[in-house]
Image (tube, rainbow, N blue to C red; front, side, top):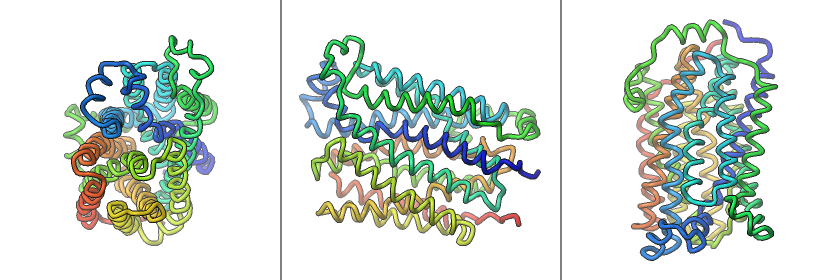
Length: 432
């Protein structure tokens, strides 16, 4: 079926939806180390602080707390992302995006008033359940791009990720310098906390995105494809079983490669904030600037190299190059001695991430039928979410017992597995 003539407009809208969503999502990234001071330290005054603060050093408790908090969101994303993807195949992308975005905005509103740890956890649970909007928006890109332009469309998704991660952590790090409680300590009775300003920024962005989807996003999935998805009965088994019993061999290999790659990358990426606090005494603002550098590098790779070279070199080859670059980055971080060398490693890490993610997504999309884009991209996202649920926890435990050097060397070793899986993956044929 020929694509609609408004593909460029549709891609622009999806790009803005993803960019705004990811900017709000990534605001929390540079705040994880500092969160211990409020929720687990003496200022928090909770039983969790009393349990851990007297048994472990403050820094290592921060690492473990960050791993738990990061994993909580991802395990829920793993469980619910295929549900939203499959639902969007049946009823369309737009209604699912509106529902998930509205709930995400409410979760950020709850974060503004999360004066206690259990309230913060509740908001992360809601955000994790409703996190299918990224997979659905990615499926919308597949709806409006032909097979010969798929890698370019997915590179645009990668640019939206990069821009979101470029500005989100910077906003988080800078806005954390303002604490409403300093001027209005009485607001603590309403749940206002030292992180309410970053939470308010995330909430405003999310509500703005909801309005933009309502007025600017037009349905991208054709009625015929929706009807075909409704006629097909969904599997009643567990999402985990569905993930590892995908009937299309190349999609199964891509999802498994994504699992092992994300298992390593998510753990190592999550530990970066704690690594620079330990080795370079970074503040939340400094961490935000570090993510700004990473985001800038991602834009250069995904916005320039992938979009131009994807159709020429093939997504499989670019993915393999990206994994090798990531191995080099982790080994450099494991052996780091100076801050300048650390930023060289971050450059390799950004190149690897910028190549692997959009090319793997494009490979899954190219191997999937038009009526199953939401399903398989949802399962692909679930593989990543499952790995993100495990990766930060494993990395945090390794960091605690073995230190940063062994942790990052182990992360490099794990990446051998996706290299082996990708070697068996076929490069899909393109349409003229």
